[in-house]
Image (tube, rainbow, N blue to C red; front, side, top):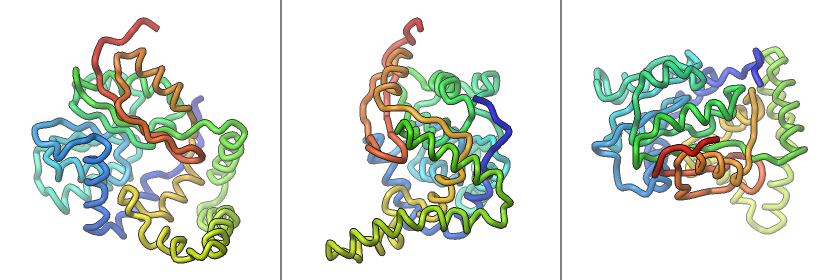
Length: 275
């Protein structure tokens, strides 16, 4: 599935960086440590595929990794460069480039890495399975692959694909009202359930403390969700089978169970099997 219709991910992340706080950075670091099961990344190499805001490149660098970040979106590259200039000026252990997860020659030129991180990225390439295949080859022997891919919900996923197509055809001036109007019924339903159960404060905290999830912003994640196109999906079972055929062991799965991303952390334990 290739398309010229594409969401401005980098522009969204540039707006997010205006609200980046030390606690959000710390939360991103904790997220990496938890999912990878490590205390730090000292002595490790880290490839951030589709680095987006650059937050997790920054987190990996603060944990001691030598980091290479790349993104197809020039604004996202600029976000990562902004964070490097702010927190690691002149640092030779953090390189940033513009590149594509679908560019086999570019990816081969990077070599292999101890940790390859592609969270919520490859389902936006327009050729998700090819991107997953190419990115998996960048994982060193005994290295880790950490991906997050939108869950396949059948007709619900088809509905959201149409929503995303509409969003990206609209003039930018109505993007924010479109997101707010579309998501309002969902949010009101959640608020009503919280109030009726006597826990209305939980809904408020879901906005004021949303960063506790991965250090991100709920509004910017919401815009990313509504507008994020291209859009492809996969089940945990399909993702696990795909990577096991390529020599990976699935170590940890955090399924979403509904909308959102299935997260998988895997280790390369062998050569890829013939497909």
